[in-house]
Length: 146
Image (tube, rainbow, N blue to C red; front, top):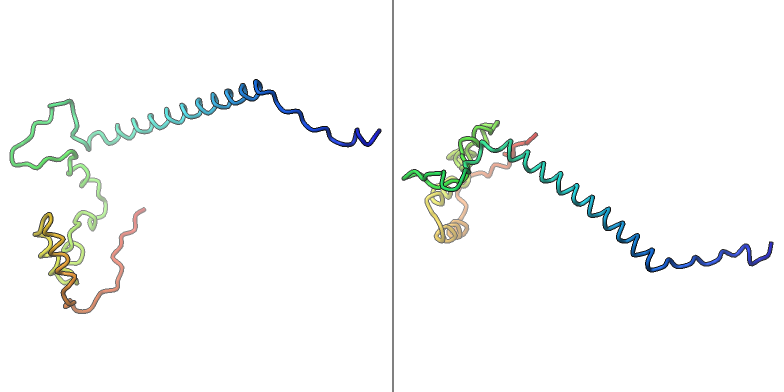
């Protein structure tokens, strides 16, 4: 045993042809994984659509006749409102949450009537005014979701 035998010989570089074949095989594996992932996602989306089909009103083109005096809506609100389990979540207004005694009751009354560009103007005016609402309640009004 000579000293030359103990020294590791440098590894030979792979030939370009072998490297491109391995890269092509890796790309094919990645493509197969990507196709499987996309197929799984498509199936999950179809299942979700089937389970929520009764909520949307979408149908064949021209099947939804518009009723006069009724605002346009893509989703049937009554179906979603029926799914709300906690009664506190059904009313999203200020009065529904805090009643008429909260800090912003007066501002809410005024701002609820304003639409569009004027809303920003009225909101800024309310910010400018002095606080006249009594003591500020530091309680938490959050709702825990399961």
